[in-house]
Length: 143
Image (cartoon, rainbow, N blue to C red; front, side, top):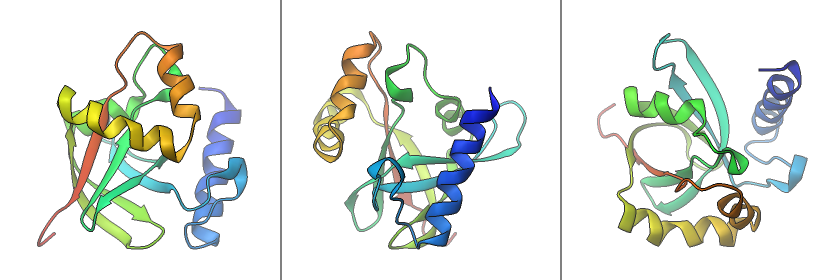
């Protein structure tokens, strides 16, 4: 990975934290969550800003779009290997959640929420032949 994306990612994380979840860069606003996950192979913690759509009081949806790449992002595999993660949110703070990849019918029902939140998701879908996975991140009780 080049320095630029790492620096860009860190810049987004810093802006998120400095502004209580509001990120004006690239027009993200308050639609991001910071996904804390462990590497599937390394176990090293990673933090990734992703669009988070709140579907109810205890659940956020995230799409493994990778901007329409033909491959899933690394965090996709991290969530599959280690589904109990933490997210930082604009409104609920740090939340322990369990990730679950949505089956196709649920994924297809959730996808329009991403397109409505940001029309770039429609472009991402057209750029790739893969079905872009969607995960639900549900608050873990007692964690």
